[in-house]
Amino acid sequence: GGRVLVPGCGTGGHVVALAERGFQVLAFDVDPDALAIAQEKIRAHAAAIRAAGGEASVRLLRMEEAEQLGPNYDAAFCLGNALPGLSEPGQLLAALRGVAGALRPGGVFLTQNLNYDRRWREKTRWFPLLSGETADEEVLLVKFADYEAEVINFHCMYLTRKKSGGPWQSEARTSRQIPLFRDRLADALTQAGFGELRFWGDFAKTPFDPEKSTDLLAVAQKTS
Image 1 (cartoon, rainbow, N blue to C red):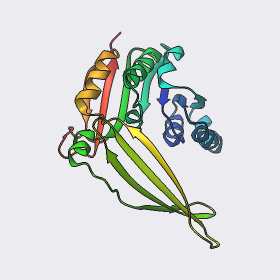
Image 2: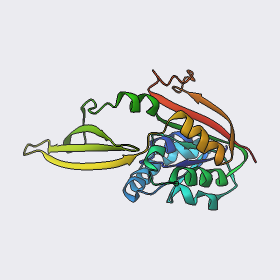
Image 3: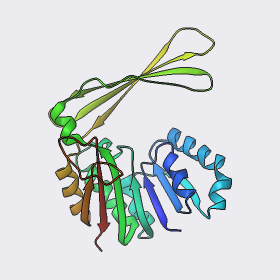
């Protein structure tokens, strides 16, 4: 029955999962197309959410603006490697302060991102090809990255073809990411008003290893 925020919720899969476990969930993002998909998922699972006593809603909002929502929430879950996309100078700290402002004192913040300590060291350029399908199309996803002095340009090439046949169509998207090292995240969380920081390498709470972990998970509490 806790009140939960989901900053950078994307298309909302974990918004539904939390609401189906009885949480009162407010999710937000800056991408209206993603929010439309999230809203569809909430509608599709409305019966299960009601049966669990949960609630779910979404809104268009920047993390930096989240302070206007609080301090009313017990926890915030920012998953799916959302924080590295806050690549403008000062944007990460402003976003964390915004989320902190929405939490009650003692509220918990959990974020899951890639292990950039490892990624920045290895500078992997090409990533495994992903494939899938929609009701009408075959889909391929090609991912690769360019590394600059301070940021990573992460490129996605979407290839789609109608199942009925025809030529492949392509669409390219690029996102700018900061390498969110463990120490950088720890410093930003502390400056934003969080304490009691813990870091894991996965959801099984394996200790974070900058050399080997795939992910970096951080858990922190709002100090006041």
